[in-house]
Image: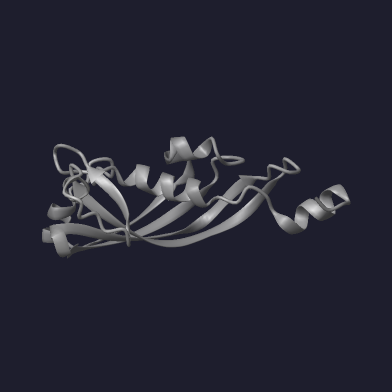
Amino acid sequence: MTRQIDYTKLNPRKILRMAPEIKHTFQVSELERLSSWLADDKGALTICCQFKIIPENSVLMTIEINGQLNVLCKRCMSAFAFNWSSTSDIQLDEEGDNIVEGNFDELYESVTLAHNGTFNLIDVVIDEVILGLPETHQEECVHALGHEF
């Protein structure tokens, strides 16, 4: 029987010992905080995370996110399909150790691990998408309203 992974409490060091990669598809409806930024809760995001140790003994997670989302245009208020595709490198720090010591590597985004050495992958996925969502679509706005903005 396959054990269900709790994506809200992932320990990157344990993942490295077991398998340095995670692949999963999240339905948008599962990503509650993200659904308030979208036109609806349809669609899915496929993630692939690879983990490795980097200098300063931190864990680096490379996360690829792909999928289609229905976004609400802030200009014309109509929904449009947006094909999401991104890759990010995120440094996973233990309780801000590297930040406190002044060793924070500015090459990477950073997520501080909880006291128990875990992080919430769902929150990371949602944050990555929210930060990169387009506010408008270009072509349909011009045609839908008959003039340019």
